[in-house]
Image (cartoon, rainbow, N blue to C red; front, side, top):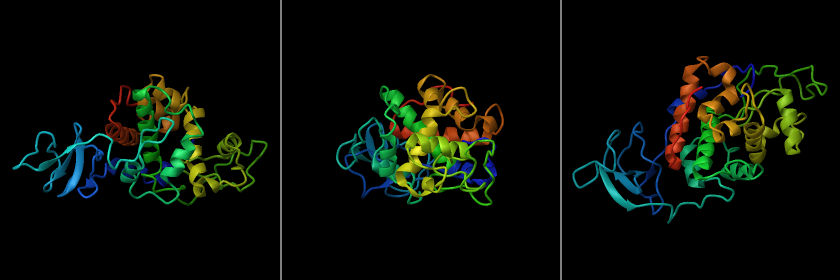
Length: 297
């Protein structure tokens, strides 16, 4: 998300591109819908995926066979019955965040302990304008946010930038870099960096991140709050925030431009852009919402 970022320090492109919805096993399936079937996902016997309001159990290895059209006694999928949010699915939290804990855990299976569902929900509650529109707008924004943090943090497997750390320290600011010139490297799900971002985010959140930047990688709510702060309030290299982009018609491509457009958009790094788009399409499928237009920047 930051200016002058060393993208090579992150493994996010490969991790984001390789990420896939993790299907539930048959023992976990209930009245709730499993993760939506994904044509690029390999399924093995007893994996469960949902499609068209039904859960389906794979009888053996399959990849491109659509459950709704390849189920039956002699085919690869067995229809497990209708699903739709009842039974064992976690109720979505209040405030319009339409992602359950089960879905979060399934789709970030290798996340670090700092990245908890409770921390995500608590942080979202500090930004009531996030995901506050109609159902389509809410789900698109949640999918866009998750896709970008998925890419930035390698499916939530990174809490901070790999060493050696760069000097993200603008000494022209009156407050300087009291924690040291390399203390403001990327941290958190959206890789907050630079002393002025730590200062501004800390002032907004009421936390002294300028002197204690490690809070971004150790506090389960603060780490997500910094991501929401950037998403809701910072234009980055764009003329609008990521929140304004996804809710105002600029589409998912606009969120990319707000986060790292100076390096990725306009042909700067099409592979990175495609990685983000792939993640967005997975999450919109999971949440059951049309992704809309303007996917690329």
